[in-house]
Length: 395
Image 1: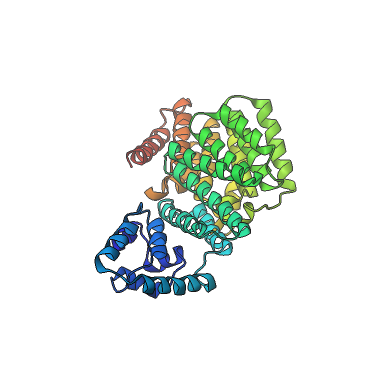
Image 2 (image 1 turned 90 degrees about the vertical axis):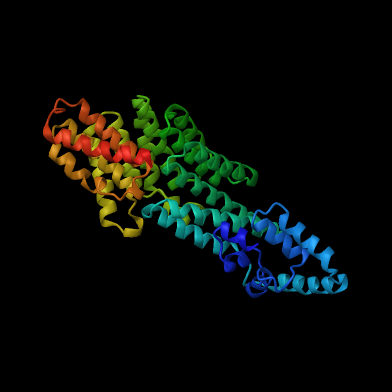
């Protein structure tokens, strides 16, 4: 039990909370001072993904030491009563929502790898709580929060450069939403899947999926997000009219933006004006409309620079800076391009997520296509970008 708990990165307190059991009693079980009941053994086995091995060990031990069945039954009744009456150890939806809010907010500005373990642990806690057969209303809340947890796993996984695994997460979140009959979660998960497709050379399919998701998404920031995704995907495949129409819808939706069950959690589950500005800047840049692109991208950068630190998305800001740099390269402002990119080039390696590497490659492509390609500033900037992106690829 201790070996499995350690392998899962769980403390004894976390495991106790996972199975809704007393911390002291669990510690005595782990130290061999107390034999668990069949029910507790099963709950520990599930929480630690032991595949029944812990349950079988307990059954074998019982057959060897001849525990008195009557004493065991009495102890089980006591523990059953403790479980029924206990409230402090129960995982409730408010706890999960608070943790998701904390993770979602940190997702915006923190490095991604530590968030993976927190999200996996939270998913495990939700799964263990659902194994206790909670009341239907509470179960529905926990299932919804589990779907949101999995969607965040999709975002982190994509940022780490694993699109296939990210899409599996997104599809799982979507399946949960469909089963739950929750169009808000379904639309958000489909939007996540569209983003994964967009970043992995499937913009036409992503555009169609974003438009489909918008037909069921609640009013507010979800509509802003989906229209912005559709616009950028349309720009990638040269559908100028479609892109402009989607830009208009995104701006109109932002004027009356409201929160739903997902966006009210905040952080990565929001689509604020700063994020819309970054998306629209990228869309105009892909359409070759560099003046509009720089205006929107600079608006996004200013919003991130002047807003709260906890809402400053280093990824989105870096990509907005890349869009401005490309516009300046096209107008021959090489020093200005380097200046706007300086904070991106100084990002620590753990923050050079896959989308940022892709954005820097787009800048390098713009450098190579300009008639200033042989300028010393161009060559120096290109070499620096290549060094950073190649090191990201090796990682």
